[in-house]
Image (cartoon, rainbow, N blue to C red; front, side):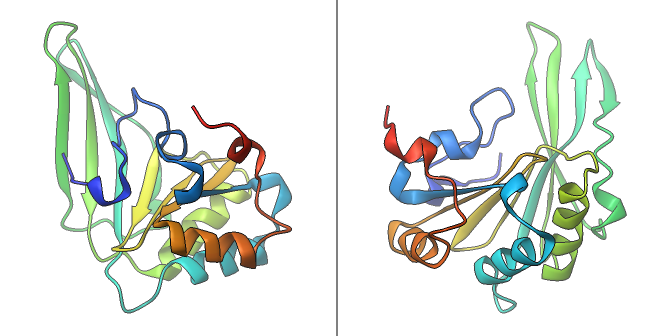
Length: 172
């Protein structure tokens, strides 16, 4: 599987989302219901810089009893899918598995397009975008950002009125 150890998380659909694998000083959460489309775009432009290579990792399919079923993620409607690599994680005893697709060099405008569609209610995939500094998890409910403590502190100061701090109070 793809190494995301710099973010100290393990991307696995069977485990908690990246936000809950991280510590409060290394994460920030925005609720979709608290954002408008222009704020979402601004956050994405703040996180991802054009000069850094952006990667995408999402669940492309599920395996059940040796048959592969598409996750129907519709990621291709916003993002040009080319030269992807698949990682298959199987539980041979249970005859189940997950197929993760990894794409490199995603354009920022494609990320904005995808996230805007999710914001407007389109079905989301189990998906993360990442570069050398940040990891972004997006769903219909939240936008979660994982990064180093200094960068996250800066984001929390910049978006003090906008980010959701509910889970920052509770550390396991």
